[in-house]
Image: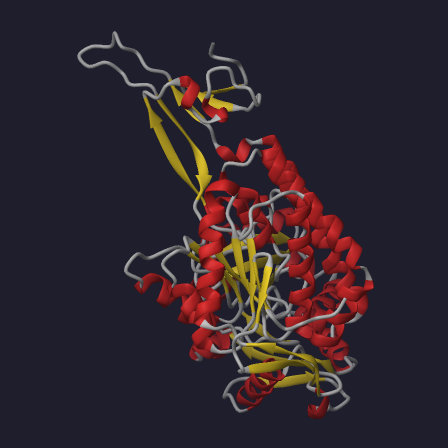
Amino acid sequence: MNLTGHQLLGTSESAESNDSFFAYNPTLREEIDPAFHEASIHEIDTAVKLADTAFPIFRDLSPEKRAEFLLAITEEVQALGDALLERASVETAHPLPRCAAEWDRVITHTRQFAELIREGSWLDARIDLGNPDRKPLPKPDVRSLMEPMGPIAVFGASNFPIAISVLGTDTISAFAAGCPVIVKAHPAHPGTCELAARAILRAAARTGMPEGVFSLIQGRRNETSAYLVRHPSFEAVAFTGSLGGGRALFDIACSRPRPIPFYAEMGSVNPVFLLPGALNTRTAGIAQGFFAALTAGVGQFCTNPGLVLGIESPAWSDFQRLAGAAVSTYAPATMLHGGIHLAYTAGIEARRNTANLHLIAQSSTTPDPEKTEAGAYLFATTQQGLLADPTLLDELFGPTSTLVSCQNQGDFLAVAERLEGSLSATIHGTEEDLVEYRDLVDLLRRKVGRLIFNGYPVGLEICHSMHHGGPYPATTISSATSIGTRAIQRFVRPICYQDWPDAQLPEALKNGNPRNLFRLVNGKYSRESLS
């Protein structure tokens, strides 16, 4: 498939601007054709106007029609075959098997959302029947359900060019809710974004979706992103990326004349606590699993384990030795792009020069900066050293972590208390440990979105129960998830109908319950008809 580098505005293409840029191969350090055009204000306005026009049509389509659209997307993505994987690999340096795993995630989560909207529980249909004879005032008939909000802007992640980008959960969950989507393509993989966007547009044409249900905007300028977030027609924005970028756009969303929700997934340190019961019996296995999680994808996961805490003991010393030995074997590998590589190398240099922080292991092979390579690094400090320098609690994106020696459970609690919000926290221990360290578990429940027991944070199961979020700065809205089917709740709002004629109610609220939904009727769940 030939790429054009144009804006994809509904069923039309446009390239008004002479300002253009190229994708970049971080391994070969060379530009990749074609040139991609920076979106103009007029082109963005055109995309948003199309989405506005499409919204009332798309919103009112049957769940079956929207499910057909989602399943058509999976078919079009599958039809792209190796072209999508190869372009993603060239633009990001991800190996082809990693790109194929992302492709599988897209198929899985898209099918899950198709099933979800057919099943209907996400509508949260509620009915409280009226009683005209109630004294002293009649009781009104009150019914409510969730409905789509309107056009959504999506900013994808640099580290997941397929699974958390144009085809990511943000886009698919918004479609499932009934919201048109405009995606701002990531400039680190614009060709991958165009291929994915064309698959969505083919699916939309096949299934009769209204023009404007989807558009793709290209651009690398901060002003382009800011203009999208400021646009008055958007009802919400979804973003995955850095803390600095996410916070800047979040502030814009909040300062609009009409503020809107800004769902950002940003920085996370993902602490790992090694409790004595596990450390004394599984030291080697824990060290091996930690190393695998630390270096997966060149450490470029938002769930990378950036802190590991253990209580000083012979087993803790063994863990440090084993983890360090593993880190020394890590062969440097190419990072996603020059910006991430620059931030990582600067962060490593700063930590090398940090008091009370000691480098205990690093890749034995020197990384080649000409290939944008990163080596693995393992630092060590004490609980006191960590708490004396707040910067050590910040995420450093790449294959590095800090081992923190503690004296007792109190030290664990002191560190946990100082932690900012994270996507995850991991505990290795026994069930007896969980009882003894209950205060730590209770504290971590306030700090993270996912608690992992005897596992590792890297690798998310794509399922209905997954919550990928956490208190700030992990996300801007801790109740929201960017992975799993609960993500649909970000793009809907409740609407209530009072004393409304049955024939004019949405199907989900009609007396006859034609969709056979589970509904909360007078406080009790039921599928029964009310007629």
